[in-house]
Length: 122
Length: 111
Image (tube, rainbow over all chains, first blue to last red; front, side, top):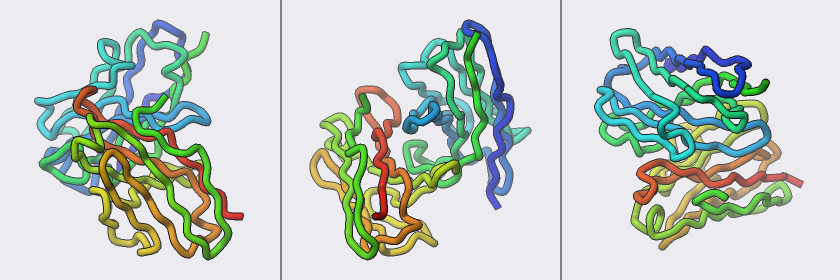
């Protein structure tokens, strides 16, 4: 069965960095695009970034552009999110989420991880 | 302020029908991009309910249906049940932002 397991969350001071990981299993990871989606406490879903199956295409929300970098290692079936210059407003649960179709990373998300909480606070 | 606009809340009695709207613009829904709907139960990750406007994944009851017209989309839930109480989100692609966008979410209360 498809599993996405995020890790790397925690408490970090404003301006510092953090790297999230998402370990994938149960499907051919190298064939699908993957997203990061976040949810601030008590708030709605916010799309963060997406990466194509081979890592050649990456897109970011304006709110994180220039500060966050999405990447993947298909040999390790792992997705990453490098977060730099963190701000209090980046506090959220971060989900990794698999694209439903292999050919369109703007297709629906058919599997979500359980999320990892990032808290940016001094 | 979300790019896709949803009502903050809707409610209905068991057995009733409710609809949740998702209003976009010419750069997302109006441009013909697909709309997807997700259900998020308390303290859990979202789950896809409707994909590509009106398609249900296997396992999703046919009480749930989706439609898209012009710059808007709708999720309809018939035969409302207590377990349908959750937050619902629409999602699409926006070509002016070159990215995915979510609606602000709608909290469904079953009275």
